Length: 518
Ligand code: ME8
Image 1 (tube, helix red, strand yellow):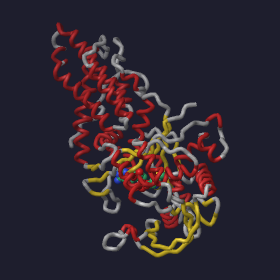
Image 2 (cartoon, rainbow, N blue to C red; image 1 turned 45 degrees about the horizontal axis):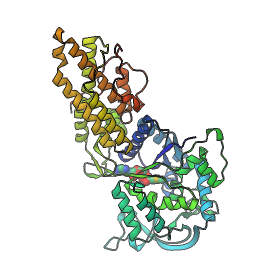
Image 3 (tube, protein in one colour; image 1 turned 120 degrees about the horizontal axis):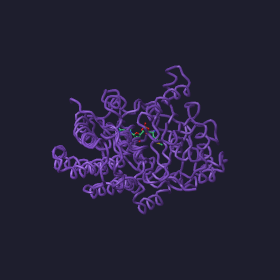
Image 4 (cartoon, helix red, strand yellow; image 1 turned 135 degrees about the horizontal axis):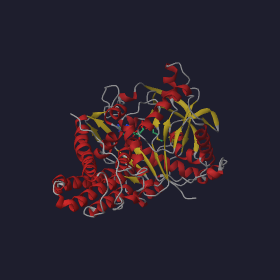
């Protein structure tokens, strides 16, 4: 049994609204997953929801619902959102699933037995709004706390702590020996800088059940529930455990329920996350895994944050992009294209409606859409849709685009891969302008040349469909259908030049991205 390429997203807080940032992260992960599958790897793509905590408990109470009923309703919306984005997920974790709770408790037992969890009294500042303890180090230069923390109270209570001290040296060593562990490089350097210049304080991992009962009880003290990260991060191993991955089930001695369906997932190949939660994934998570006796994930891939019109996305100020509204108006692939083409994985991005429309018009309607539509329409008009004999004038350029796309997909350079693909789109559109098939068609003596040109164009469209599959799966599928080809172009190997056989009859061309008055 082969280990699968295991890729995950952050699990979203169930009580927020799905926004552009969530959509972006999930689409990026979907493209990597589809790309790997297209290249022949077995993949497991996991996403889901983070459902416990005080805010959920309070919001449910305000609506007069039980927290579970409140979460169930929102979870249905988030799952519909995943379908809307056409994510090729293999599982959807909810932290309220019993399969998850069981592994959270097993992992806490294990770490507790290893002597890494202890209880002590904590007295300090506490932000109820952010559910977090603060220290003097969190004060701003003028001595006050950021208003985002809301009301600050002093609180004295006993809690459980996870030991983080004495863990820095090996983690620094791991980051230095494995440059790809945190990517991009500047994020890795930030983590290294943080580890080298700070002493890690032990992490508070509990809340008294009397104050917060919407959480997973600590297996060694039912008066407490586990708080946030020991719950949320563990999702990455609870699904492998539920799927019978022996690396996890072995470590926790939990029964493999369906050994015949057991798969190997852990260690994760890539955790895709946003820049705000790097410390939890690159510092706390490896230390937690080490304490559990489990191998570390291979890579934490960190994306930047989207803004809109140069300002923070915020529901309260109304500065939002509603992905569902954009998709309903422009189509899913127009949305997927814009976010992937506009923003590389790493830096922050800025959504503008004008930028979105400009890319739609130039690159989708006038670029790809025009190429496919005129290539296939001319083949239909001049040759009754019958593919002429193979000809290789654009073969080298198509091969170059395919090679670059493959390399860039493997390196998670999604924006650069789209640039390679659009290099071929632009070249093929120039080829139409240069060879002028509409003029050739008027001169019977030039019939052979017209055959050559029409073959090169139709075959380039076919290659493009294969290259585009991970990014714009709906468009790639439509292109295959318009070419009269069965199935979906989901095997990268099919990008090799010459796949369209002479004599094949294409289907009916139709605009992929209708031009719009913008
Ligand atoms: O942090 N642009 O959940 P979350 C890009 N439950 N990405 C953004 C973004 C923006 N404007 N806003 C948020 C959580 N994100 C925890 C994670 S993982 C074990 C637990 C990203 O709903 C954010 O960086 O606040 C994170 O990766 C994801 O959306 C979920 O954020």
